[in-house]
Image 1: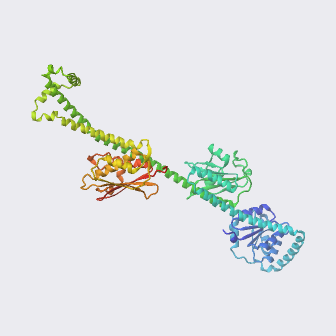
Image 2 (image 1 turned 180 degrees about the horizontal axis):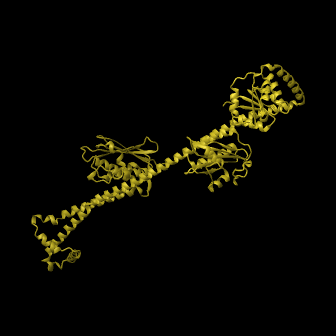
Length: 635
């Protein structure tokens, strides 16, 4: 609330303890002015024009009745309340008090919990004179009070009066300035901590900033454990805090500690002098603590824990501190909750990524095994047919050489041929039996059993399968090799790449800009990328009547890069499979070969080189692969 709008309460009482109680009770809702004597109270009332005056009836210099009588003539519109000792609140005295000008009364000991509401209710109702027939009594008492006032004033030093007023003004200004500082500090600390999203950084930073800004002896943050039974110290200021955190300091969530009570009741707890409280925990790490405040950390009605702040001075906290620090505690609770939510989200994302990674590895492994199995499947059958054809051929040769054995024994090749026959026999091959079976085959069909063409076809099948499987190895392992970085002039590299492809003349058109900067990359790997892209473009054009592939190298519109484009006029890539083309083992070539690893290998190589690879395609018009490679900054 704006201090200018707060109503002023003047309390006149010689007891400093009672004045402190009233000041603490009313200080948050009113501006409380104090006077320790009747004379100083009258002076203060004249200078400040309060909205209400509370007057102890047993003042030392003037009685409360005399002060009330005098104030009736000085500030006639201001209501007055008598403060009676409880044993004197009798009907007759109350009547006398109302007659001399009091509009109401309260009794000692003062109920500080209900006092603010009682005062507010009193101020909000209209006050009328209760005993209008006692004007002569009031006049008499006014004269008496005026004489007494003059007599006492003669004995008072004018400098003391001025000093007293200055002290009251200073007190009032200090109170307002302190409130302002508390609120400013709360705003500063709140802003500093709410930007931190890592709980391990947030908590120690918060306790350190709080101690620095408020000049507290100690601050510590307790968070409730998973079972809700203990409040565990998660951060503490200074060496004491670090020692307690390391020792696993924790407090039971019950009414045996201020932290426990703050959490249990969800309200701030204050101890103005811990030395006078028998049940207060004497912490050996914090021997100088005199005052302590514990504030709950609450978010959306959920208690996360509590924060303790401690001072080396007694009576260090009041209502203003509770207001400012509870606001700070609320901001800290929000920051803690946000940090926890972010941590949980990171954990969930990490677990999801881990699961997806395992799924991807399992899928890729399964696809690789399946793919290798498919490519290797023709090999055993082809080998078996080659062996059959070879044994049949050896059987024919043996049969033909049997009759010429004596003549052939002198031929230099005979020992080798004889060794071949013997090796076949040692491996369980009965060449004579095979020759007998072949003798039964019609001459027109004999070539089917011993034709060299069949052997060559089967060997070609084996060779193609082996080559494809080896290409899989290169696609999988190639990008992972340690790169051999060299300076590359892309037009020179691409000219060699295009020439080595052996494509029909006129299919590839090149467009290389002049004065292009060089790049730094692995020549072998980059060459492999463009071989794959050009090969894919050519295979996409296998039924095109007029196939065209354009290879272009130009400065990129993106600073620091050179752009290479491989453009074909083929059928294009359907939108529904556009994202799949980068996935390992995905291929549209089916029985036309291809491992499905070419583009995924290209992407990995380009990424390792610090570049980018993009694709743009329109069905029926063609496809463009665009590769951006960083220029050589060391040139």
